[in-house]
Length: 232
Image (cartoon, rainbow, N blue to C red; front, side, top):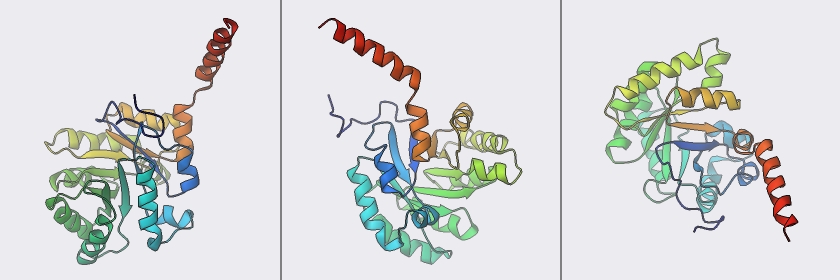
């Protein structure tokens, strides 16, 4: 049996649960854990954590040392050729398949992501807002298409309806592209997108704790332990 510091692979690999943060202190409250498939980052999360692009090699290696299967890192430029050059440097930070390159689903980003996917590099098209963008991600061989539920709702959109349409486009495609729903702000939001069939979510470490730590379960455990000690 695997020990707690070196967990075995998750028993249900068809669903990917990721943590959305670059804050190592917060991430260490959750990792390592076999439920966590990976960690997603972006330049905004790096800035909030007080990190720069130059800190990425250390961050990636630290996260892989915490037994995540994949780390997602976003390019920081806007032109196709520049994205590809930056992606080459990011890919070199980890073994094949461990580093997922995140690229905004712009015209230029779709072209860069298509080339990376052609080479066998896992790609996440991020900042996906429309159902056709999820379809385009599948057409181009992306590993993930990432819509932002909370930001959609902030903009006055019916985010769950948008995500349901995206999921329908992916289910109608033969591509293995997963919808990776981000900007999740509550336990109910997580349950809602899972109910829509999304095959991946990414959430803040604090929300992971809310999903996994249930006080009634802890209370039952305390009773079981007290009864077990009573037999001593």
